[in-house]
Length: 564
Image (cartoon, rainbow, N blue to C red):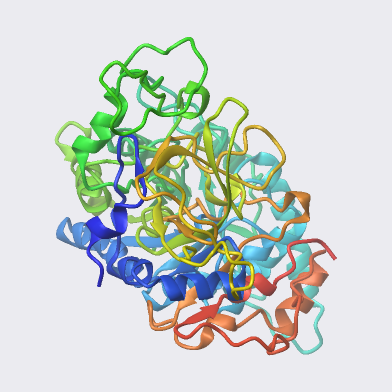
């Protein structure tokens, strides 16, 4: 296997931010022929997955909880990665799945995840979402009073339809229908520690609704959920204290009895970088426009050659010196297990920690991490199409992808790409030679990665990158560790350019031969009833091209992303 320094030497940020690489990533990146074959077979860009890190990431949390005597249940956030392979991997690991739409819910149920391992937290829940959640008896998180009213109405329709079935026995001994399990989403009181949130209702609003009979008889409250922005364990523990007070009040009213829980949502941090000094150096870099030095007034300009004298102008580190105002903390010391230790160890009242308060009440702790569970589970490959420059001379490398295919809600993806040399040919200038569309590597330079959308701001990364060995057309750029949100949360098919394909390593996380599976006709029929269509875009096996050995396409690629 190629050592990491060798993999990284062809592309480095200025200054570098070296991504942590899983062994499977190193193995693939050290195999240019397979990287090239994957793009030739499945197109560029391509999302490559290996979910073997998922159980390990979850174990970091469960081991801490067990050591504290806390019952922990993890539901992996489906929104972080849309593949069916992720759902299967989570289910194999004994984890639940958090879903945010009818499609996500239908696919998870079809994949064999039992309803008691599914939580529906969609921010907006139209009737088809409510109906499928209630019919399957998946846990439904109620966000507001209007959603309660809609859920009551759909629950009455569902129970009415069931009771009208010929010969159907009553759900309960008394003939009354069995209530549907729900959780109440709490909006904790804003403070200097807890930011305002658009999700949920206050504890007072929920209790007033219950006391007025507004919840009805068909919805059974089993627990409390909250969703906070940010990663502060102290803020999360403070909100937990308020949620436990609501649990106490619910129990006084006969709700949230056996199996009660508090779900603290996602936002459990991870770290993309191992080197804290690199992260600090990046933010302190002078003339960067990042906060460490004064922002220069002049426009961007080409980087000075590596052997330029000390008096050469300093090149900016971001495109047009644009500051990065909102980014994920790509290096963090306190992640997953240590983060949960701090959370459970925080005093939510004098003499009682969060862990103690959960134990005393016999309340289960639940969470819905996405990014931190996907840590190490995927990377994105893209083909170099062209080398050019802006009209002011700034060097550019054009990739066959667009910026939405490696972007979350942050301003940028702050890890260095890996350049895999697959495009260089000694005889590239001879048009009579087969494969001469490939090119010789350019001279060394510093510049930016740009994408396919016809706008000036179409930057794959807004950071300046150094290519000390140059770049050739046909080379592959790998963006490491993108499985959590970066691949899928904002991806767009503008210009009618297809979305990226998704593949899974066979044997990676026990993928086996199931990577090509797609939702069955049963799910398609059920989805059409709710106004959507899960039908396949292609008949299985209709593509005569063989798969790349060791990889299988994920079935999500064959699910139509449009309404019927």
